[in-house]
Image (tube, rainbow, N blue to C red; front, side, top):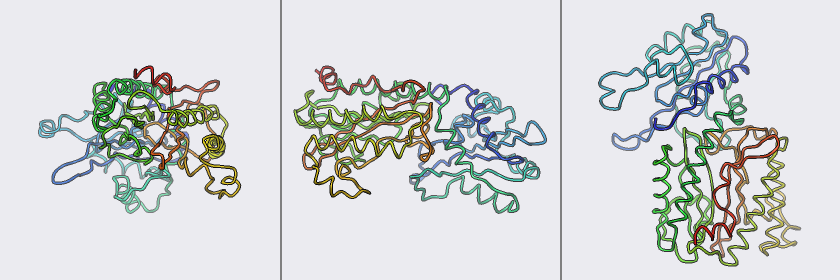
Amino acid sequence: MRYTPAPPALYVKNRERFTKFMKPKSLAVFVSNDILPTNADGTMKFVQNSDLLFLSGIDQEESTLVLFPDAFLPEHRAMLFVRETNEILARWEGEKLNKAQASALSGISTVYWQSEFESVFKNVMNQCERVYLNRNEHLRAKVEIQTREDRFAETVLREFPLHAYERSAPILHRLRSVKQTEELDLMRTSAQINTEAFARILTVLKPGVGEWELEAEFAHEYLRQKAEGFAYTPIIASGASACILHYIENHQVVADGDLVLFDVGCSYAHYASDVTRCFPANGRFTARQRAVYEAVLRVQKAAMELLRPGNQLHTYHAEVGKIMESELLGLGLIDRNDIAHQNPAWPAYKKYFMHGTSHYLGLDVHDVGLWTEKMEVGQVFTVEPGIYIPEEGLGIRIEDNIVIGAEHNENLTAAIPKEVDAIEERMN
C-alpha cells in the first residue's frame, strides 16, 4: 500500500464496538472482495471490502476475519486468515502479507493462512450457536454478480443448516456512520489532498482546455500525494453538460463563457472526499451565473446550519427543500401558482433541484448509515444543493464535507474557494 495506514488501535476498537452488539455464543465472519475480471486475462484494480477493512485494516485479497468473543480458547476470539505467499507469487505479483505483518496492521495476534480456514472454522462452529453473516445492504446497492460474500454465505448455510443466523450489516451501518478520531484524521488528509488538487485546477482552467485534461490534473495531484486515486468517477462538466447529474464522459472542450462544474474526490487509505465547485472558464461570472450561483450558496450555508446533532435526515431534506423553493421564487424559475398546484410527493422546486442535499461519507463515497435515526456527533455528511436550468445551459452545484460536532461543525473542505469574489480573485 502506498498510503500510511491507521494505527492498529483503531481496528481493535472497531472490533470491540462490533462485538458488543453480538448475541452470546455467536461468531461473525467477514471476507474480502474478489479481484474482478475485465477481458482476456485482465483484471480490475483490487478494492477491499469496506467492512473487512473497517474491522481489520487488511487491504489484501483472499482475506477472512472471524470474531468469536465466547470462544473456549482465547486465541480463537479474533482470527485473521490471509493468503500464503510463495516464491512464484512473490516474483509475479510481489510478496503478500506474512503473519507478523498482518498481525501488526490489524492488532490481531492469531493469524492463519487461508488454506487453514476450513479446519479451524469447523472447530469454532461446533462451539457457537449462531453466526453473523455480512453482505452489501446499502440502500442504493444494485449488485448483479455473485460476490465472495454471497458464495461464502451459501456454503455456510448449506454445511451448517442448524445454526441460527444474524445480519452484520445493521450493526456496521450504525458503527461506521460515527467516525473515530483516527478515521477523521484520514478524512482530513483525503480532504487536504483534494483541496490542493482544486488549487491546481484554478491555475490551469481556461477557455480551450479539454475536460479530460482537467481530469488528468486531478489524477496527477492525487497520485503525487499517495492517494489511491479518484474516490468515484469524476464529473467535469462545462456549459450545458453540468445539467446532466452524472455526466462522466469529460470529453468536451471548455468554451469562453462556460461555467465548469467539478464534482471530484480522492480516496486516501480508502476514506473518500467528495467536493463540488463551479468555476468560470474565463475567470469571471456573468450576472446570471452569479445570481444562480449565489442562490445555491445561500441554500448550502443554510443547510449546514441545520446539520446538527438530534436533527433527522428526512426532516432536514424537507427543510432544505423549502429554502430552495424560496430561492427559486427569487430567481423567477417557479411562481406561487406552481407551488399552489404542486404534487406533494414531487414539489415544484424539484424541477430544478431533483437530488438530495446530503449523504453519509467515509470508507465509501455514499457511505452506510441509519437514515431513520437522528444525526450524531462524529458523523460526516456532504452538503450539496444545486440548481439545474437546461433551457439556459446552466447547472450549478456546491458541495462540502462536514463533520458534525457537539458545539460547532467542521468543514473539511472549507479551504477550497466557493465565494464568487474569492474565486475570481484566485483566477485573475
